Length: 343
Image 1 (cartoon, rainbow, N blue to C red):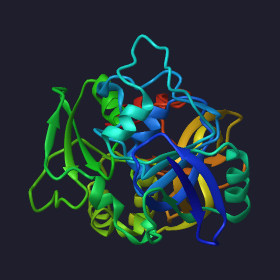
Image 2: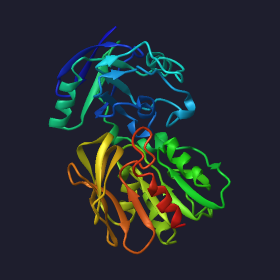
Image 3: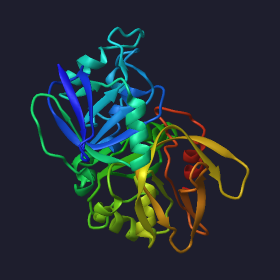
């Protein structure tokens, strides 16, 4: 079945379908990762977005077991690739990518010139698009939707049996964030984004604000919770969206980037040192105003945007990238150890 990718400025790209034969709309973004499509497709931070893979060969190692995914389902609204490989070769493959997409009702198109699509996004910024297959549909702007509410857990979940108790606010948490915390012998209490931890008298030794999709200013209740939690002076770690939420809670500000950072090769410099780390990233918003009492912790070596903040005296810290990676490099996994030492 043939299909079209249509930008809001009426630019059209034609392609062939290999996913579910249904139309979809959202914000188009690209990732520069050469691998890790199962992890990327299941990352809740991609909720409401149509993902373009810049690496040309996609599908060549099939789909791994669900226990390696970053959430329980595919989160992207649609997928665009240059070449789809329908004959995977990997000992851990459970099904082909096409079978998975059809099973979860996610459309996908093979459009040969993904380079031109990527160049258009880089020149003009992320745009609203629609993938038209069986019928025409309207454009949808996910930035006007509280996406965090759609991907957060709806109940309290307890995991781990460690002595130190971590309160994990789920704004669209990746599974590998949980794995990395549990690996360090911690006990996790995972709560919804809008859960009132003070009214329910939750006890904890430290707080982690997870990654997630969309505009951080939509998660007002999470921001309020973190603002109150800062008064307890217990260690706080924010990851990706959690970085922006911590900044807002402390009196800083955030803004939407022209095209965001997505991929596994984003270089981040440690402020005040000579180290530069390769990081995995997936975000469209960033910190613009650093709050009082905090200082820059990391900056992006490509565009000098903020990639993390740390309090000058108290154990509050956050990073814009993903120290848990999955997919990607493990250069900054040490940040979890740094957080644990502060408990």
